[in-house]
Length: 219
Image (tube, rainbow, N blue to C red; front, side):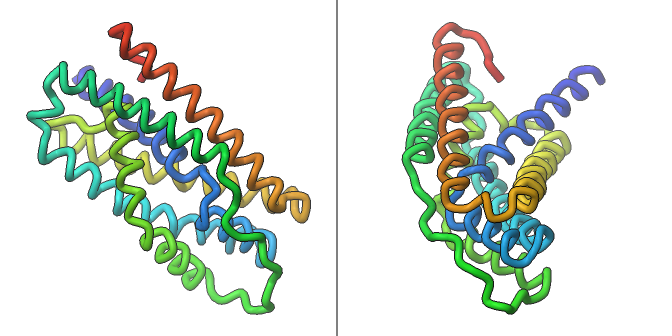
């Protein structure tokens, strides 16, 4: 019983971290959510993020299913060791890319047509779903955090639910901050958000690489 409780808590914690880490970089979806928050209001920005989160969880499940197909391979301690090292390197490269990236589009002004909340959520979903490369990010995150646990389908499901929760927490927090800052949060805000996220991701990935080499677990 205690073992299952520990696994659930571990997966819940990792799920929230992964959900936030995958959502935080300010790509086209993030820019769109910020734009709608500024031009239409906080809840329009948030529901856009909800659509993004739902798209992300689809790709997260695909990535998790792919790793499940090779569980015997990744459950081997030696293989797991190398996967965590590779995952750390890939995440560090991702953090470097995020740090140096700039928002793809300037924040546009309002057009006068808000649309419904559902419409805004659907467009957020479709924009994110058009980029299947997010699967590679989830593969790196799952490998780094050892997120896929064999023979624990219920616990794993809870882990994915918390991943979705982490993503929703990010979009809720972002829409809140942007709505409070208002016009002060423009392109420079997006750039500094990316730089902060890039530094955090690089530091965590480098620490993970170091602890894995030492035979210890960071997460």
